[in-house]
Image (cartoon, rainbow, N blue to C red):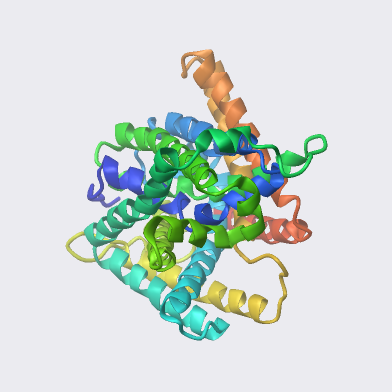
Length: 445
């Protein structure tokens, strides 16, 4: 097995997690949360805290496994070592053929949407998809040819995207009226646990945090730095989300935010920065989404390579995909393989949007919902390590996996709200079943 160069430090790993999780969604989630909570800001903060359990405690769980190995593959390696090789094969196929490419295709399309808005170009689906295609092609090239370039862009985009979030948060706390937001009378009376409907969208906004584990073998001192990143990054994300939410609610009354819906972002920008506020926010949002795409691709291109290192029994074309190229020994063949899968899903996404085949939804939901089922299996394994005495302390071995599992259940409950949930589940399960059949056939060969 070839030795992989250690190109990334702790900051890049943290930046990757933050950069993927904090995309454009946070700028447009505040009105949805307030609407679900009846305009109650305090209850909105509680929802953010509940939604964050999916990555805060999930990160703590995965860090227990990450500290025990530095083999390449991330989540797949943890499944292989702590669950079974066959189950790892299924998860690898799911991530390579469904999870990564569907999210890449959709988020790249969002880049196209915002760039058309920024420059006043005609926002046709064709134009938006073309821009998205050009951008993810650029990201694939950049991350395939140079780990430093890809990592550098991830650091830059993460820092830039934090600027508007922190500015609005600070301005809201300093120049707004935070106490009025918390003391305001709810816009509408909530019945029972109706406010729980806000958990799904919030939990989805945290998705993507596990992608950083795919570069575990390229992180310097990964057994220490990756667990640190999996704990620090989720806490930074939660603090940023809550501060931004309170800041926005301090600058505009909750009822006004609900009435204006997504337009409230531009109203806040105009109030803080003047006439150019909306344009400035749009530029920051574009950079934020670009950082999300880059972070996903940075992790994605290493997945087939990681599977190929395990041999032909785990993945086809292993001899071709395990090769590295260039002075930095990048998995270029693996990246090319991923690029063509992404092209396929881009075409599928184009058709589903063009002909409204998935109303009020998109192909990325296929993977986001189902991925948390895999995580629950890993959380259970952390509990079993505690029972064997390999993890010390009831908090680390019992409380953390239980809370992480509850966080995943919150995400799954959000997915169940979709009428197409079972269609998404069928596609994902079919992919896993095909991988099992492939694995079994090569075990017998």
